Length: 175
Image (cartoon, rainbow, N blue to C red):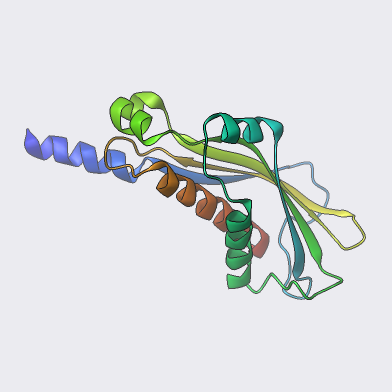
């Protein structure tokens, strides 16, 4: 019986987080891949009204500066970010929905409290403002219980996973 419980417990832990990118099939361009020659020079990070209200109401410690740094770092891993490039690509990231449970809700209510998540849109434009690509990113942190970590840890995971998905999509390494 303990062995079955252990196997189920490990399976739940392994399957409780997910990341995905949704692209618009109606797009006329060849996808959202950016070449190194284009180099992203500007990243604009915005929070939707609902997200701003949620951060304020639930007293979530949300650093936009930290989030933007993560996006820059992940794009930098693929040589796609060059702040000094004045003719570069502009990436506009808007966080449209977000939920980060308090530690108490996560620990006490466990899986009954639902997952933490972050969803948003990414719009990529050239220096002239023409649309190159647009896609949606959705990341879910589903771990719950006393081992799920505090709110800061889960928010950090969401920011990093979201940033990683942007970089993977724009680099073409999204398999």
